[in-house]
Every structure is written in C-alpha cells, then in structure tokens.
Image (cartoon, rainbow, N blue to C red):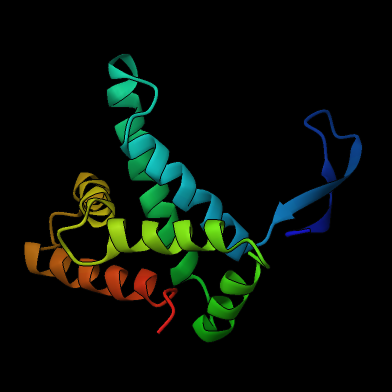
Amino acid sequence: METDKHELVGSLPDGRPARADVQVTRPHALVSLKLLALDDRYRNVRGPAQAEHDREEARTHAGDIVAVLSAQTNLGEFGKRFGSQFGQDTALKGRAHQTIRDYFGDESKPGLVLHAESLIATLPSSETVRDLGSELRRAQRLVSSLLPE
C-alpha cells in the first residue's frame, strides 16, 4: 500500500476536541497519480466543453509534480521508490516514464509549458523572464531525474 496512516488531533470550530486517522499518499505514489492525471487533462479526454477546465487542471498537476519533487531531500532515494512502486507492472512503469518524456523531456514540452503558465500567473513583478527560464530548466532536470539512465 502506498499510503501512511497519520493521526490528526485538534479542536472543532465549536471547541470540542477532535481526533482523526487519515491515510496520506506517499510522495512517489502521488507523483505517479499526478502524471496520469496530467496526461488525461492535457489531452482533454472529456471533450471540448471541458477544455478550459481541463487545461487549468493540467497546470495544477504539472505544478504539483514539480512541487513534490522540489520538497524531496533525497532525490536518489525518491527515484528508487518511484521506480520500485510499479513492481512487475512494466506497462504502468513504461507509461509513467513515457509521460515524463512527453511532458518534461525538454523545455518546449507541454508539462513545462503548463508549469510556466502557472508561474507567470503568480510571477512577482521583480522576477524576470530569465528567472522563469532558469526555473523551467531546474524543473525539467528535476522531473527527468526520475527516468532510468
């Protein structure tokens, strides 16, 4: 199972104590799910009526993939877990790797274009296009690090 159980303890809005056990997806599994969702939303499999919404969702998935990888303190270990989670399912592993190539293989690929669109929408006025290019190169290297050598 690619989740971990965590206990949350706190108070409800009315002040009563509350406790809940939640299952949290492990980061390497989350990246796999985000890759699949990115591909679905970018290809707009739900049709023209959902095109704008799907594009926004694809932006979110691309940014989330980069954010999860950026938060990792040991990319080598993360990469091992990412690859091993597929077990004997070589088709799913191949699809995940192909999605990385198709969406993050170089700076012109759709995943990085989507990531750039999200960044531009929130880019502080002090940031420059050069800074954006540097971030896209970093993101491309980060996501591509999940590919087998």
